[in-house]
Length: 423
Image (cartoon, rainbow, N blue to C red; front, side, top):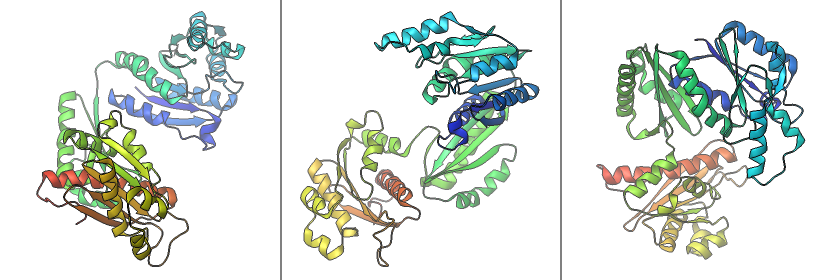
């Protein structure tokens, strides 16, 4: 069945908000064997929304529309849908009771404006929103399914998984099955990855193998299509295994895994703890580690030692060493890692010091120079990097490299190399 997505909102076409809804929907639909053939974004404009709906109805059997179901004057999707489909806009009592109940649970009085969210086209089926006030609805138009959903991503996600996908699975019935997996790579550029696995890509020409840059990571997405789900899954697994064997330690995870999650799993599995000292990253590494649920099992301490005095006062880095080598140096990074490990009484100490820019660089120590150190009770290792890009990119790359250094510490610990990475 031809399927397309229409996302609505001035914030999308102005660039002030990134459209994550369409990518989420396309990926979820593909997981049940439905390929999206077109994605369109329009603003909160009646004629544009009308044109998009009419065009989609000529092409596709399934249309998913997101956005414009809120209580403000610019939320006009339901009204435009009713006009386009030649239906009256009616007050849905079930939707109204839901909106009132939502505010009642929060101990708030419902604004009269929110009553607008209970207006939907006649003969449309209500789709409940478990986490918000904007209920969606499904309109059947000449055997075509049109889903209207709110644009708030967290609301859209839950409604899709709990309501939309089950309906589409029933409508789809038997047919082609899709299986997809994404391998996540760090430490290799997109062109280098393509060069290393070009023979694998050629070997499996019938399978889609795509390269998706997501700075500072790169993703390899494998998608196979077949009539038998188990057979299709086996093909994807085989290709994933071949690519993993080829790229080895550069692959840190797959699908929903994050590098901080992988590192957290390694720390927990080994019964270890970590303390982090940051300068140029300003707490970004600690933020990423503590974003993982259950990180209190292993994340003991995070210190932002931004100034030279803080490095001395908090981490016992000798002032004389800073004067001699500079705050951005391998020796200072080592002392920071040792100091935070001793202070936190943890298995590992991790430290970062560098120049994120845009100013502060010199010919000897340019912007982008970063030293990352990891320390355990036996030894301390340090590695220097020269990251390109702006301040945000340098900080992100530094945090990624620091986490990857911890991951590689465990690879080395459990593999052939017994030394810390960076030696």
